[in-house]
Length: 245
Image (cartoon, rainbow, N blue to C red; front, side, top):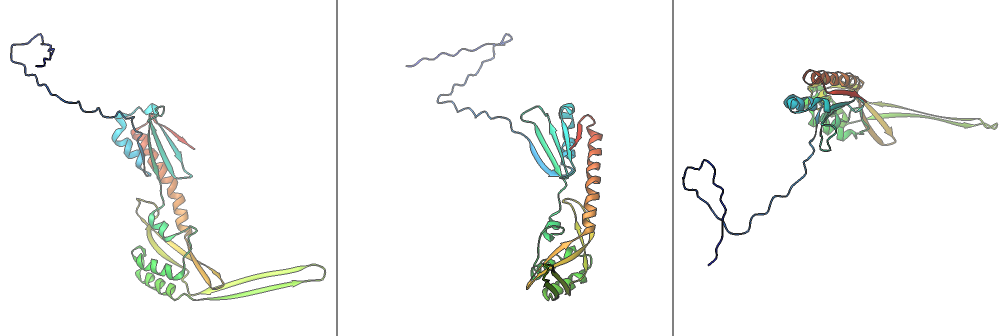
């Protein structure tokens, strides 16, 4: 017969009510592994730092936080508890919209006429004029270009040389077309005019899409949107230092 003892501490104000003691036999469960705190790292659209501060401003020390603004990359970065290894890092970026990237406007993207025809047909919703979309699809499917090349080469006895080359391309492509698409992720659509540039090399033809208006609007928006976000942050967090780099 085994015997075990149990020490029970009785409170001073004990009133004599029976105390129930439960004894369990067996191995105790393993303790949960102690883990280090994790850094909070969030990356989103340009208003992400403001949205985060809007709900947590009373939980942070503004004097120990900072905001770094980089207009070249169109970004705002909020660092909370800046001397803590596990500091929070909240970043917002003004990102080019998915639609602009897919069209390849103002990028190095090259289109074959037939592939651009299919793409334009499937993205008719972004055209301000649906009849213009249909005409462009048909033109791209039946792309024709007349290339006139002039080559002049000569060499004189005294060593002088003439080497001129010119190429004129006359195609059935329209000069431009209009789209109604968002310039930035999370923003409303804008109407822009897009031009088609053709690059002809023998039988190989590639097309690129260019929009000076979109490029100008992006430059204007970039500073306007960032300034609006900084003004909103100053309203709710006036003691956070803002640094431009």
